Image: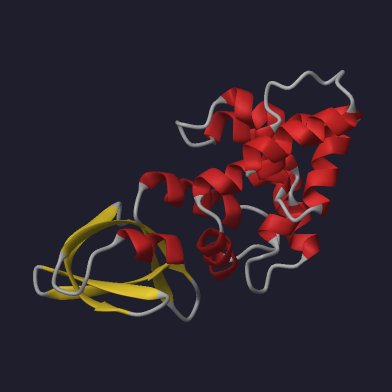
Length: 199
């Protein structure tokens, strides 16, 4: 119904923004990532929108770019993930990091979102993993996504990623650090390569 809304910011809190357009202020629920991209009260902004229709309410969700909106729509298409859960996930993950986390099967990164447990995170990964090569943000290459996916196939790179994850790095960051590494190298050498890139 609404593709986007442009107007002056007249209200803002930790989870919503109101934009005034032609004398009418539209309140949109937004992610923390969107809030970071918006200006202050009194400044102009544009939000790409999604209208959620329920029996007892209409709720407008706003996003700083089309990419975040696309990921929101992917997330609410996952069984058990509603609009609030999708906003929580996008508040903790940019579209870029979410694409890599899904491709890497990184449950830990997705469960950082409040109210999102391991079962929901696993379902997100299971249902969306096959779409990441086509829908990953434009500056993330198919090679990057492929690197994330290969860690689930076993082998030395997978072991090295597990070791780096045990040291506190996310699986997505660890796998990205090992992009292009020779999978036949010893695990110890792969870990050293990963640590050099991560520090």
